[in-house]
Length: 164
Image (cartoon, rainbow, N blue to C red; front, side, top):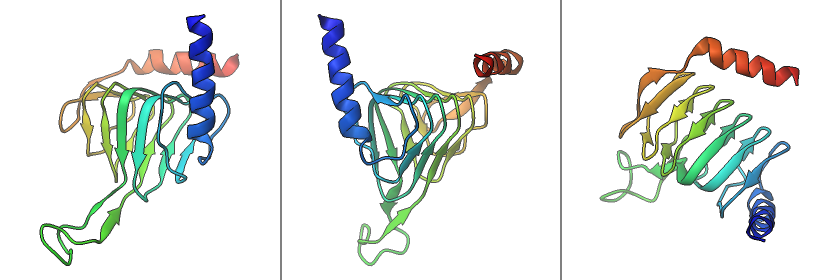
């Protein structure tokens, strides 16, 4: 019964949260998410409580997975050239690009203007404010790569998935 209830909730969350996005097949929201109409994603993207805010575009590749309570912010106040203190009413909008097979742990914050490369893993609680290279494992605040995934193993898994 509990499994059926979870499946029904996932269908409701997915229908509600994905309705204004551009997305491929197999995408789902397992918990409530708030995505913008400037969110574009590939196939098989799974969200477990994502909040995307701002006027910038968020482009997400295939097979993306996120932990709970993740945030992406694509706009911020222009504090350098604003018309008032501490900041004016003007905003700066920056896009976010996320490659295929990226996994964000729980409570990750991704700021506008960054690119997360294919196959990267972002540790729980990280603040991503700079680009993360492909196959990197990154964490901290600010998030920095501290390890590389096994490239040979990654591409063998990827090739096997394409042959299925």
